[in-house]
Length: 119
Image 1: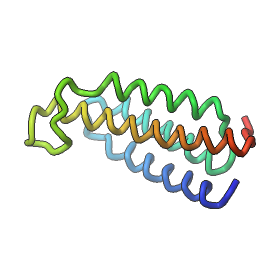
Image 2 (image 1 turned 180 degrees about the vertical axis):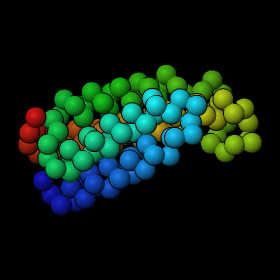
Image 3 (image 1 turned 90 degrees about the horizontal axis):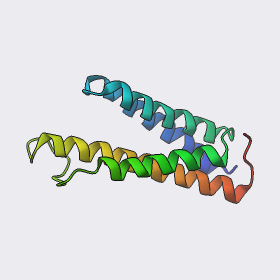
């Protein structure tokens, strides 16, 4: 695996881990800590070339579906005080899942192109 993808995997693993830690005061913290934590674990595994095409693909599809499921009925941005707090929270959660999905799809493409799935 090229160095740039290894570094990218480690960077996203750290970013996802930070995102998991920042969920401690969320009303549904456990769910989001698990989601971000799993994304961090998959990113570490990707950086170490120890994750399969299927795992990244399934996680990407699930997060992409979650994006559409959580997308608020009326998107009002991400800033608190700029609209209904429920819509803002749903928008933040939905776009968090979209970020994970995009990263997982990039991993999926890299694994498929390199043909080096270890699991």
